[in-house]
Length: 379
Image (cartoon, rainbow, N blue to C red; front, side, top):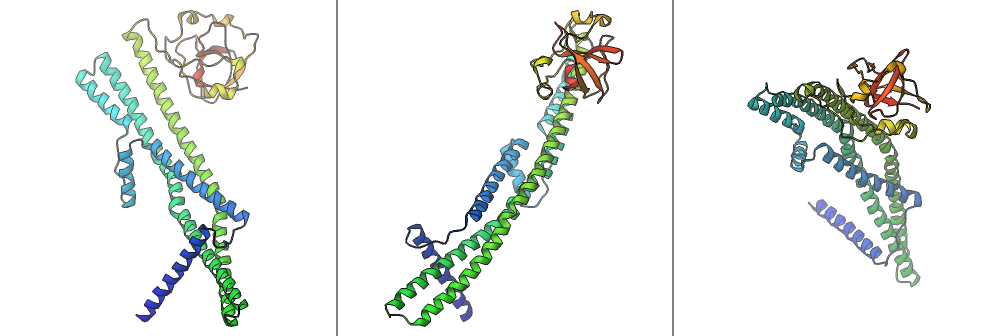
């Protein structure tokens, strides 16, 4: 019991000494041991890494789950170490409503049939979104959380220990300074100075040891950056896969709607509301691929004047041709179009007056119109 009381008293004394030293430093009444510039840079980089990791983590959570109530619920399940219940995505819920509407309004009517087709597409989009959220959470969010809840807590703990060791060191320096001043006035025995010097040596050793431990942890932030970089690549990969799946699903849906709309509304065609791709001569391959719009697909989509185009008389323009890589398989709707196979290379060019969503494609002795959105234009 006496031992515990003495330990508590000793701890209280150390805490009080540190508090006095810290307060005097704040008021400029005590000297403070400064860390070297390299160490300060390591501290600043670690703080910046932690702050930006928190912000990126929070915003990615918002991206994957916009509903704040759902995010709070998922957070609580994680803290309780329980499995988060499966939640219907917005796309899947929309698909359910459309299917129910088609059933009630008449699945055999044109509107009901279209509702069912769109419902199936929305269901596939919802499933793709679910896969994306799951993959992104595992490959990106989890490593960020592990850093904040693991490595960063360890770094913070060692930094607090280093702060305490520094306060102890500076307190010992102050005591030695006072002891020497008292000795000079012949009011203090020499053994008090010796004791203060011994305490200073011990405090300096403990401070140096803790500084080295903290330095090694701070230098490990470089490895954290490497790990986060790899996770970022995984996140981009999963996001690319997700959007590619969405694009393919919507192209399939557009084909289905385009093939049926001519029967429902004769003389009309399904087109795109997106701006047309820039001319070949003024756009780089990267820009063209990145800004490509969703083009018409299916039979009967080309304007009447292009349908009557005589392919045998078509010749490349004076401005020249370009190579293009086919992104997806494309089935020609009529003899004026050129069927495409994914990953093959073809020669393409545009003619005056052509729909900007289409190009003339050539492969060997075959030529025909091809949709721009199925191509990646090369230099």
